[in-house]
Length: 304
Ligand SMILES: [Zn+2]
Ligand SMILES: [Zn+2]
Figure (spheres, helix red, strand yellow):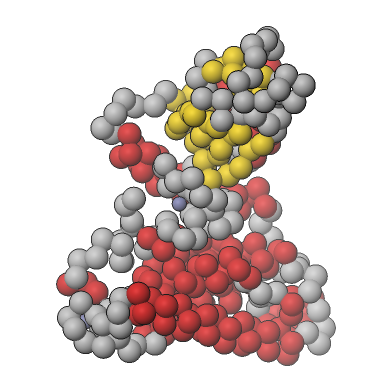
């Protein structure tokens, strides 16, 4: 067996543990100004779904023959499809029925956004069982890079996470890849999701540790692999080197894009020149400039 023997559920729980606390804090912050959202458990929601009678009103968005079967939910502010609650329960199975949940928002008969177990989901109210996981940042309508393993949207909120958070996500993603390529270890790679992490790492000046987590996590230890796949050690070593080179290339293109956006100059007026391996945020010419600029998105947990 490879060194990583954790199950998907264990990994999911670890990820939820890592991100759940942050989510609760972020949600509290986001809702501080308004009234606090009602908290209920997944068990409450499931009980409501299984005991409420079918809602018999006319769905304002879809013809009666296409309308989903719904029940009038007190917890979710109006009718919701039975099936989407069952599907949601499936997504949150690893978290358990006691998972704390809140309704983040509801848009009439279009969508409802619920948060629970350190994750956010959008239920489409005109479909029978349309449940999509959303970026973890409260209020964001984009999809995450990789559900609960890289739970932020690529374009905006992933790039706002700190270097150490990105490294932790890279570790989780690497462990997932290791399992995915369990039978063909030399074919492992970190994929588009790895690229998204690398691009965010370049913003934060955290290329080295994120790349190391991705490469070391995605492949089995070459020193141990001969016991499992005799003769594969060389191929695995080669694949690891190759993956590292690819990540470096992607980091360099990401740095070029960021410098272009910054007009090629650091805030101090110096031309931007450092390679991502220098682990300085790509918008700055030096670590000193990055920290004295006091950029809130660099080197500390981000706010929305
Ligand atoms: Zn987002
Ligand atoms: Zn500078």
